[in-house]
Image (cartoon, rainbow, N blue to C red):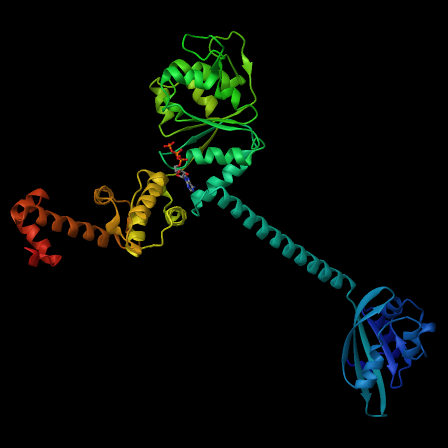
Length: 466
Ligand SMILES: Nc1ncnc2c1ncn2[C@@H]1O[C@H](COP(=O)(O)OP(=O)(O)OP(=O)(O)O)[C@@H](O)[C@H]1O
Protein backbone atom coordinates (compact mmCIF):
# COMPACT_ATOMS: atom_id res chain seq x y z
CA UNK A 1 0.00 0.00 0.00
CA UNK A 2 1.20 3.49 -0.79
CA UNK A 3 1.70 5.83 2.22
CA UNK A 4 -0.03 8.71 0.39
CA UNK A 5 -3.32 6.95 0.91
CA UNK A 6 -2.97 6.83 4.70
CA UNK A 7 -4.63 9.75 6.37
CA UNK A 8 -2.62 11.73 8.94
CA UNK A 9 -4.97 10.64 11.68
CA UNK A 10 -4.36 7.05 10.80
CA UNK A 11 -0.64 7.51 11.31
CA UNK A 12 -1.36 8.57 14.89
CA UNK A 13 -3.54 5.53 15.46
CA UNK A 14 -0.98 3.19 13.91
CA UNK A 15 1.85 4.51 16.09
CA UNK A 16 -0.32 4.31 19.18
CA UNK A 17 -0.42 0.55 18.69
CA UNK A 18 3.33 0.25 19.22
CA UNK A 19 4.63 -1.21 22.47
CA UNK A 20 7.67 1.07 22.16
CA UNK A 21 7.57 4.78 22.78
CA UNK A 22 7.85 7.31 19.92
CA UNK A 23 8.87 10.82 20.87
CA UNK A 24 9.19 13.50 18.22
CA UNK A 25 10.74 16.90 18.83
CA UNK A 26 11.33 19.76 16.41
CA UNK A 27 14.79 20.92 15.40
CA UNK A 28 14.92 23.19 18.45
CA UNK A 29 14.13 20.48 20.98
CA UNK A 30 10.42 21.15 21.57
CA UNK A 31 8.25 18.05 21.88
CA UNK A 32 5.71 18.01 19.08
CA UNK A 33 4.28 14.51 19.13
CA UNK A 34 4.41 11.39 21.32
CA UNK A 35 2.55 8.11 20.98
CA UNK A 36 0.54 6.64 23.82
CA UNK A 37 3.26 4.27 24.99
CA UNK A 38 5.59 7.26 25.31
CA UNK A 39 3.16 9.10 27.62
CA UNK A 40 2.98 5.96 29.78
CA UNK A 41 6.77 5.69 29.80
CA UNK A 42 7.17 9.33 30.80
CA UNK A 43 4.27 9.11 33.24
CA UNK A 44 2.57 12.31 32.10
CA UNK A 45 -0.32 13.18 29.75
CA UNK A 46 0.34 14.66 26.32
CA UNK A 47 -0.76 18.09 27.57
CA UNK A 48 2.25 18.18 29.93
CA UNK A 49 4.67 17.08 27.22
CA UNK A 50 3.73 18.62 23.89
CA UNK A 51 5.17 22.11 23.33
CA UNK A 52 7.67 21.71 26.16
CA UNK A 53 11.40 21.87 25.60
CA UNK A 54 13.34 18.65 26.39
CA UNK A 55 15.45 20.64 28.88
CA UNK A 56 12.26 21.44 30.71
CA UNK A 57 11.03 17.87 30.60
CA UNK A 58 14.38 16.65 31.84
CA UNK A 59 14.51 19.15 34.69
CA UNK A 60 11.02 18.06 35.72
CA UNK A 61 12.46 14.54 36.04
CA UNK A 62 10.37 13.03 33.23
CA UNK A 63 13.46 11.38 31.82
CA UNK A 64 17.20 11.60 32.05
CA UNK A 65 19.33 12.07 30.04
CA UNK A 66 17.53 13.69 27.15
CA UNK A 67 18.52 11.81 23.99
CA UNK A 68 16.95 14.57 21.84
CA UNK A 69 19.40 17.06 23.34
CA UNK A 70 22.38 14.82 22.59
CA UNK A 71 21.19 14.22 19.00
CA UNK A 72 20.85 17.98 18.55
CA UNK A 73 24.41 18.44 19.74
CA UNK A 74 25.93 15.57 17.80
CA UNK A 75 23.66 15.73 14.76
CA UNK A 76 23.87 11.99 14.58
CA UNK A 77 22.09 8.83 15.72
CA UNK A 78 22.51 8.33 19.47
CA UNK A 79 21.59 5.45 21.76
CA UNK A 80 21.44 5.88 25.53
CA UNK A 81 20.06 4.03 28.52
CA UNK A 82 17.50 6.37 29.96
CA UNK A 83 15.71 6.38 33.29
CA UNK A 84 12.16 7.52 33.39
CA UNK A 85 9.43 7.02 35.92
CA UNK A 86 11.54 4.47 37.85
CA UNK A 87 12.13 2.24 34.81
CA UNK A 88 14.96 1.85 32.37
CA UNK A 89 14.78 2.43 28.63
CA UNK A 90 16.99 2.13 25.66
CA UNK A 91 16.36 5.41 23.81
CA UNK A 92 17.65 5.79 20.26
CA UNK A 93 17.38 9.24 18.72
CA UNK A 94 17.53 9.87 14.95
CA UNK A 95 17.95 13.28 13.33
CA UNK A 96 15.37 13.51 10.51
CA UNK A 97 15.82 16.15 7.81
CA UNK A 98 12.97 17.04 5.45
CA UNK A 99 14.84 18.53 2.49
CA UNK A 100 11.74 19.81 0.67
CA UNK A 101 10.96 22.52 3.22
CA UNK A 102 14.22 22.47 5.13
CA UNK A 103 12.65 21.29 8.34
CA UNK A 104 14.33 19.08 10.91
CA UNK A 105 12.95 16.70 13.50
CA UNK A 106 14.33 14.41 16.16
CA UNK A 107 12.66 11.04 16.30
CA UNK A 108 13.31 9.05 19.50
CA UNK A 109 12.46 5.39 19.68
CA UNK A 110 12.21 4.28 23.33
CA UNK A 111 12.26 0.64 24.32
CA UNK A 112 11.55 -0.52 27.88
CA UNK A 113 14.52 -2.65 28.98
CA UNK A 114 13.78 -2.82 32.70
CA UNK A 115 13.18 -6.59 32.62
CA UNK A 116 16.23 -7.24 30.43
CA UNK A 117 18.41 -5.17 32.77
CA UNK A 118 16.95 -7.02 35.72
CA UNK A 119 17.71 -10.38 34.09
CA UNK A 120 21.21 -9.24 33.22
CA UNK A 121 21.68 -8.01 36.76
CA UNK A 122 20.43 -11.32 38.12
CA UNK A 123 22.72 -13.11 35.73
CA UNK A 124 25.66 -11.03 36.90
CA UNK A 125 24.67 -11.72 40.49
CA UNK A 126 24.41 -15.45 39.74
CA UNK A 127 27.80 -15.34 38.04
CA UNK A 128 29.31 -13.59 41.05
CA UNK A 129 27.79 -16.24 43.31
CA UNK A 130 29.12 -19.05 41.14
CA UNK A 131 32.52 -17.42 41.30
CA UNK A 132 32.25 -17.19 45.08
CA UNK A 133 31.16 -20.88 45.37
CA UNK A 134 33.93 -21.92 43.02
CA UNK A 135 36.52 -20.22 45.19
CA UNK A 136 34.96 -21.79 48.28
CA UNK A 137 35.10 -25.19 46.60
CA UNK A 138 38.76 -24.71 45.72
CA UNK A 139 39.49 -23.69 49.30
CA UNK A 140 37.69 -26.75 50.65
CA UNK A 141 39.42 -28.98 48.12
CA UNK A 142 42.84 -27.77 49.15
CA UNK A 143 41.94 -28.06 52.86
CA UNK A 144 40.78 -31.60 52.12
CA UNK A 145 44.03 -32.40 50.33
CA UNK A 146 45.99 -30.89 53.18
CA UNK A 147 44.08 -33.06 55.62
CA UNK A 148 44.87 -36.06 53.51
CA UNK A 149 48.50 -35.15 53.45
CA UNK A 150 48.52 -34.67 57.18
CA UNK A 151 47.13 -38.12 57.63
CA UNK A 152 49.42 -39.36 54.86
CA UNK A 153 46.79 -41.27 52.97
CA UNK A 154 48.58 -40.97 49.68
CA UNK A 155 47.03 -41.73 46.30
CA UNK A 156 45.70 -40.11 43.17
CA UNK A 157 44.04 -42.95 41.27
CA UNK A 158 40.28 -43.02 40.63
CA UNK A 159 40.06 -46.10 42.85
CA UNK A 160 41.82 -44.28 45.68
CA UNK A 161 39.57 -41.26 45.26
CA UNK A 162 36.48 -43.48 45.34
CA UNK A 163 37.72 -45.12 48.52
CA UNK A 164 38.41 -41.78 50.21
CA UNK A 165 34.92 -40.59 49.26
CA UNK A 166 33.45 -43.71 50.81
CA UNK A 167 35.51 -43.20 53.96
CA UNK A 168 34.28 -39.62 54.21
CA UNK A 169 30.68 -40.75 53.83
CA UNK A 170 31.03 -43.58 56.35
CA UNK A 171 33.04 -41.82 59.03
CA UNK A 172 30.08 -40.33 60.75
CA UNK A 173 27.74 -43.26 60.30
CA UNK A 174 28.34 -45.27 63.43
CA UNK A 175 27.93 -48.65 61.68
CA UNK A 176 30.31 -51.59 62.00
CA UNK A 177 32.63 -51.76 59.01
CA UNK A 178 34.46 -54.66 57.43
CA UNK A 179 37.57 -53.67 55.49
CA UNK A 180 38.81 -56.22 52.98
CA UNK A 181 41.90 -56.33 50.81
CA UNK A 182 45.26 -58.02 50.39
CA UNK A 183 47.95 -57.79 53.01
CA UNK A 184 49.73 -54.43 53.06
CA UNK A 185 47.15 -52.45 51.07
CA UNK A 186 46.48 -50.12 53.99
CA UNK A 187 43.46 -51.58 55.77
CA UNK A 188 44.70 -50.58 59.24
CA UNK A 189 45.56 -47.13 57.94
CA UNK A 190 42.03 -46.74 56.62
CA UNK A 191 40.44 -47.93 59.86
CA UNK A 192 42.43 -45.27 61.70
CA UNK A 193 41.43 -42.65 59.17
CA UNK A 194 37.75 -43.47 59.61
CA UNK A 195 38.18 -43.04 63.35
CA UNK A 196 40.02 -39.73 62.92
CA UNK A 197 37.25 -38.35 60.75
CA UNK A 198 34.45 -39.56 63.03
CA UNK A 199 32.85 -37.89 66.04
CA UNK A 200 34.75 -40.43 68.15
CA UNK A 201 38.11 -38.97 67.14
CA UNK A 202 38.88 -37.52 70.59
CA UNK A 203 38.40 -40.96 72.17
CA UNK A 204 40.75 -43.94 71.83
CA UNK A 205 41.42 -45.93 68.69
CA UNK A 206 42.55 -49.33 69.86
CA UNK A 207 43.70 -52.05 67.59
CA UNK A 208 44.26 -55.76 68.09
CA UNK A 209 45.67 -58.24 65.63
CA UNK A 210 43.59 -61.37 66.12
CA UNK A 211 46.17 -63.46 64.29
CA UNK A 212 49.21 -62.29 66.20
CA UNK A 213 48.11 -63.09 69.74
CA UNK A 214 47.95 -66.65 71.07
CA UNK A 215 44.40 -67.90 71.45
CA UNK A 216 44.80 -68.21 75.23
CA UNK A 217 45.66 -64.52 75.58
CA UNK A 218 43.28 -63.11 73.02
CA UNK A 219 40.19 -63.39 75.20
CA UNK A 220 41.77 -61.58 78.15
CA UNK A 221 43.25 -58.92 75.85
CA UNK A 222 39.89 -58.26 74.33
CA UNK A 223 37.54 -58.63 77.25
CA UNK A 224 39.77 -58.41 80.34
CA UNK A 225 39.29 -60.39 83.53
CA UNK A 226 38.10 -59.95 87.09
CA UNK A 227 40.65 -60.02 89.88
CA UNK A 228 41.54 -63.56 90.84
CA UNK A 229 39.83 -64.91 87.74
CA UNK A 230 42.48 -67.57 87.23
CA UNK A 231 45.81 -68.56 88.73
CA UNK A 232 48.67 -66.48 87.40
CA UNK A 233 46.36 -63.62 86.57
CA UNK A 234 47.12 -60.12 87.71
CA UNK A 235 45.74 -59.66 91.21
CA UNK A 236 44.05 -56.41 90.32
CA UNK A 237 42.31 -57.87 87.32
CA UNK A 238 42.66 -56.51 83.80
CA UNK A 239 40.64 -54.15 81.70
CA UNK A 240 40.15 -55.47 78.18
CA UNK A 241 40.51 -53.45 75.00
CA UNK A 242 36.73 -53.50 74.48
CA UNK A 243 36.37 -51.47 77.68
CA UNK A 244 39.44 -49.31 77.18
CA UNK A 245 38.10 -48.20 73.81
CA UNK A 246 35.02 -46.67 75.52
CA UNK A 247 33.65 -43.85 73.38
CA UNK A 248 36.09 -44.64 70.62
CA UNK A 249 36.85 -47.34 68.04
CA UNK A 250 38.02 -50.92 68.43
CA UNK A 251 39.84 -52.23 65.38
CA UNK A 252 39.98 -55.99 64.94
CA UNK A 253 42.73 -56.72 62.45
CA UNK A 254 42.86 -60.13 60.77
CA UNK A 255 39.47 -60.96 62.20
CA UNK A 256 39.38 -64.20 60.19
CA UNK A 257 41.99 -65.52 62.61
CA UNK A 258 39.65 -65.20 65.56
CA UNK A 259 39.21 -68.70 66.99
CA UNK A 260 35.73 -70.21 66.66
CA UNK A 261 35.55 -70.49 70.46
CA UNK A 262 35.73 -66.67 70.83
CA UNK A 263 33.38 -65.83 68.00
CA UNK A 264 30.13 -66.01 70.05
CA UNK A 265 31.60 -63.54 72.55
CA UNK A 266 32.58 -61.18 69.77
CA UNK A 267 29.12 -61.56 68.25
CA UNK A 268 27.63 -60.22 71.49
CA UNK A 269 30.05 -57.35 71.53
CA UNK A 270 29.26 -56.41 67.94
CA UNK A 271 25.54 -56.96 68.30
CA UNK A 272 24.69 -55.51 71.72
CA UNK A 273 27.96 -53.82 72.68
CA UNK A 274 28.03 -56.02 75.79
CA UNK A 275 30.56 -58.59 77.03
CA UNK A 276 31.38 -60.47 80.20
CA UNK A 277 35.01 -60.21 81.39
CA UNK A 278 36.66 -63.53 82.23
CA UNK A 279 35.60 -64.63 85.72
CA UNK A 280 32.77 -62.10 85.94
CA UNK A 281 29.08 -62.83 85.94
CA UNK A 282 27.62 -59.45 85.03
CA UNK A 283 27.81 -58.22 81.46
CA UNK A 284 29.38 -54.85 80.80
CA UNK A 285 28.02 -52.40 78.29
CA UNK A 286 30.31 -50.26 76.20
CA UNK A 287 29.88 -47.50 73.67
CA UNK A 288 32.33 -48.42 70.93
CA UNK A 289 32.45 -48.62 67.19
CA UNK A 290 33.87 -51.79 65.77
CA UNK A 291 35.89 -51.92 62.58
CA UNK A 292 37.25 -55.26 61.42
CA UNK A 293 39.66 -56.13 58.64
CA UNK A 294 40.57 -59.26 56.78
CA UNK A 295 42.78 -60.30 53.90
CA UNK A 296 41.05 -63.66 53.60
CA UNK A 297 37.85 -64.63 51.84
CA UNK A 298 35.63 -64.50 54.89
CA UNK A 299 32.56 -65.68 53.00
CA UNK A 300 34.42 -68.77 51.85
CA UNK A 301 35.40 -69.40 55.47
CA UNK A 302 31.73 -69.13 56.40
CA UNK A 303 30.93 -71.78 53.78
CA UNK A 304 33.66 -73.97 55.21
CA UNK A 305 32.24 -73.40 58.70
CA UNK A 306 35.48 -71.80 59.86
CA UNK A 307 33.77 -68.49 60.59
CA UNK A 308 30.31 -67.96 62.07
CA UNK A 309 27.79 -66.78 59.52
CA UNK A 310 25.91 -64.57 62.01
CA UNK A 311 29.15 -62.87 63.02
CA UNK A 312 30.12 -62.40 59.39
CA UNK A 313 26.86 -60.57 58.64
CA UNK A 314 27.12 -58.48 61.81
CA UNK A 315 30.62 -57.37 60.87
CA UNK A 316 29.83 -56.82 57.24
CA UNK A 317 27.11 -54.18 57.71
CA UNK A 318 29.16 -51.89 55.52
CA UNK A 319 32.26 -52.98 53.67
CA UNK A 320 35.19 -51.18 52.15
CA UNK A 321 37.42 -52.98 49.70
CA UNK A 322 40.94 -51.64 49.44
CA UNK A 323 42.32 -52.48 45.99
CA UNK A 324 45.80 -53.92 45.58
CA UNK A 325 48.56 -51.60 44.40
CA UNK A 326 48.75 -53.29 40.98
CA UNK A 327 45.07 -52.47 40.46
CA UNK A 328 45.82 -48.76 40.96
CA UNK A 329 49.20 -48.24 39.41
CA UNK A 330 48.74 -44.45 39.32
CA UNK A 331 49.30 -44.54 43.09
CA UNK A 332 52.72 -46.21 42.86
CA UNK A 333 54.75 -43.09 42.07
CA UNK A 334 53.11 -40.72 44.57
CA UNK A 335 53.60 -43.37 47.26
CA UNK A 336 57.16 -44.08 46.17
CA UNK A 337 58.10 -40.40 46.29
CA UNK A 338 56.27 -39.88 49.55
CA UNK A 339 58.31 -42.62 51.23
CA UNK A 340 61.49 -41.68 49.37
CA UNK A 341 61.33 -38.13 50.75
CA UNK A 342 60.38 -39.43 54.17
CA UNK A 343 63.34 -41.81 54.42
CA UNK A 344 65.82 -39.42 52.83
CA UNK A 345 64.97 -36.98 55.60
CA UNK A 346 65.06 -39.68 58.27
CA UNK A 347 68.47 -41.02 57.20
CA UNK A 348 69.80 -37.67 56.09
CA UNK A 349 70.57 -38.78 52.54
CA UNK A 350 70.69 -36.91 49.25
CA UNK A 351 69.81 -39.05 46.26
CA UNK A 352 67.42 -39.38 43.34
CA UNK A 353 65.70 -42.32 41.68
CA UNK A 354 66.80 -43.34 38.18
CA UNK A 355 64.25 -43.45 35.34
CA UNK A 356 64.91 -47.15 34.98
CA UNK A 357 64.01 -47.71 38.63
CA UNK A 358 60.84 -45.64 38.27
CA UNK A 359 59.87 -47.74 35.23
CA UNK A 360 60.49 -50.87 37.24
CA UNK A 361 58.34 -49.61 40.12
CA UNK A 362 55.49 -48.91 37.74
CA UNK A 363 55.54 -52.30 36.07
CA UNK A 364 56.28 -54.43 39.15
CA UNK A 365 53.27 -56.23 40.62
CA UNK A 366 53.92 -55.42 44.31
CA UNK A 367 52.57 -58.63 45.86
CA UNK A 368 53.22 -57.10 49.30
CA UNK A 369 51.47 -53.88 48.23
CA UNK A 370 52.22 -50.57 49.97
CA UNK A 371 54.09 -52.27 52.80
CA UNK A 372 56.49 -53.83 50.28
CA UNK A 373 56.92 -50.53 48.46
CA UNK A 374 57.68 -48.69 51.69
CA UNK A 375 60.16 -51.35 52.81
CA UNK A 376 61.96 -51.35 49.48
CA UNK A 377 62.28 -47.59 49.46
CA UNK A 378 63.63 -47.54 53.01
CA UNK A 379 66.11 -50.24 52.12
CA UNK A 380 67.23 -48.46 48.93
CA UNK A 381 67.73 -45.19 50.81
CA UNK A 382 69.76 -46.89 53.55
CA UNK A 383 71.95 -48.96 51.24
CA UNK A 384 72.45 -46.44 48.43
CA UNK A 385 75.92 -45.08 47.99
CA UNK A 386 75.79 -42.97 44.87
CA UNK A 387 73.61 -40.00 44.07
CA UNK A 388 71.33 -41.96 41.79
CA UNK A 389 69.55 -45.06 42.97
CA UNK A 390 69.04 -47.48 40.07
CA UNK A 391 67.34 -50.80 39.31
CA UNK A 392 70.66 -52.57 39.96
CA UNK A 393 70.29 -51.62 43.64
CA UNK A 394 67.10 -53.67 43.94
CA UNK A 395 67.22 -56.96 45.84
CA UNK A 396 67.61 -59.98 43.53
CA UNK A 397 64.36 -61.50 44.74
CA UNK A 398 62.42 -58.60 43.30
CA UNK A 399 63.95 -59.04 39.85
CA UNK A 400 63.09 -62.75 39.99
CA UNK A 401 59.52 -61.87 40.94
CA UNK A 402 59.39 -59.50 38.01
CA UNK A 403 60.62 -62.08 35.54
CA UNK A 404 58.23 -64.74 36.74
CA UNK A 405 55.28 -62.47 36.63
CA UNK A 406 52.19 -63.17 34.68
CA UNK A 407 51.15 -60.68 32.05
CA UNK A 408 47.96 -58.71 31.95
CA UNK A 409 46.29 -56.48 29.38
CA UNK A 410 47.70 -53.49 31.27
CA UNK A 411 51.12 -54.51 29.98
CA UNK A 412 50.11 -53.79 26.40
CA UNK A 413 50.80 -50.09 27.02
CA UNK A 414 50.10 -48.79 23.52
CA UNK A 415 51.37 -51.90 21.71
CA UNK A 416 49.22 -54.08 19.52
CA UNK A 417 48.57 -57.56 20.82
CA UNK A 418 50.72 -58.94 17.98
CA UNK A 419 53.69 -56.74 18.95
CA UNK A 420 53.28 -57.68 22.58
CA UNK A 421 53.12 -61.43 21.87
CA UNK A 422 56.15 -61.16 19.59
CA UNK A 423 58.07 -59.48 22.39
CA UNK A 424 57.30 -62.36 24.71
CA UNK A 425 58.09 -64.91 22.03
CA UNK A 426 61.42 -63.25 21.32
CA UNK A 427 62.29 -63.30 25.00
CA UNK A 428 61.40 -66.96 25.40
CA UNK A 429 63.42 -67.93 22.31
CA UNK A 430 66.38 -65.99 23.65
CA UNK A 431 66.11 -67.40 27.17
CA UNK A 432 65.84 -70.98 25.90
CA UNK A 433 68.97 -70.44 23.81
CA UNK A 434 70.93 -69.08 26.73
CA UNK A 435 69.81 -71.94 28.90
CA UNK A 436 70.31 -74.88 26.53
CA UNK A 437 72.93 -73.65 24.09
CA UNK A 438 71.47 -76.16 21.61
CA UNK A 439 68.68 -75.40 19.15
CA UNK A 440 67.31 -78.94 19.46
CA UNK A 441 67.04 -78.76 23.26
CA UNK A 442 65.80 -75.17 23.21
CA UNK A 443 63.11 -76.09 20.65
CA UNK A 444 62.15 -79.11 22.71
CA UNK A 445 61.83 -77.01 25.88
CA UNK A 446 59.39 -74.74 24.07
CA UNK A 447 57.45 -77.62 22.52
CA UNK A 448 58.30 -76.75 18.91
CA UNK A 449 60.23 -78.36 16.09
CA UNK A 450 63.86 -77.45 15.59
CA UNK A 451 63.15 -75.93 12.17
CA UNK A 452 60.41 -73.68 13.50
CA UNK A 453 62.75 -72.61 16.33
CA UNK A 454 65.40 -71.77 13.73
CA UNK A 455 62.89 -69.75 11.71
CA UNK A 456 62.10 -67.67 14.77
CA UNK A 457 65.77 -67.13 15.58
CA UNK A 458 66.10 -65.65 12.13
CA UNK A 459 62.90 -63.62 12.43
CA UNK A 460 64.13 -61.96 15.62
CA UNK A 461 67.65 -61.62 14.31
CA UNK A 462 69.01 -63.83 17.08
CA UNK A 463 70.98 -66.29 14.89
CA UNK A 464 74.23 -64.44 15.67
CA UNK A 465 73.86 -65.28 19.36
CA UNK A 466 74.27 -68.98 18.50
N1 LIG B 1 47.41 -44.66 51.26
C1 LIG B 1 48.55 -44.81 51.93
N2 LIG B 1 49.45 -43.83 51.92
C2 LIG B 1 50.61 -43.98 52.55
N3 LIG B 1 50.98 -45.06 53.21
C3 LIG B 1 50.11 -46.07 53.29
C4 LIG B 1 48.85 -46.00 52.66
N4 LIG B 1 48.19 -47.14 52.86
C5 LIG B 1 49.03 -47.90 53.60
N5 LIG B 1 50.17 -47.27 53.86
C6 LIG B 1 51.31 -47.79 54.61
O1 LIG B 1 51.52 -49.14 54.15
C7 LIG B 1 51.84 -49.99 55.23
C8 LIG B 1 50.83 -51.11 55.30
O2 LIG B 1 49.56 -50.57 55.66
P1 LIG B 1 48.56 -51.33 56.62
O3 LIG B 1 49.27 -51.94 57.78
O4 LIG B 1 47.46 -50.38 56.92
O5 LIG B 1 48.08 -52.50 55.66
P2 LIG B 1 47.06 -53.65 55.96
O6 LIG B 1 46.24 -53.81 54.75
O7 LIG B 1 46.35 -53.40 57.23
O8 LIG B 1 48.02 -54.90 56.10
P3 LIG B 1 47.74 -56.33 56.84
O9 LIG B 1 46.61 -56.99 56.11
O10 LIG B 1 49.02 -57.04 56.66
O11 LIG B 1 47.42 -55.99 58.24
C9 LIG B 1 51.85 -49.11 56.48
O12 LIG B 1 53.16 -48.71 56.76
C10 LIG B 1 51.01 -47.93 56.09
O13 LIG B 1 51.41 -46.79 56.79
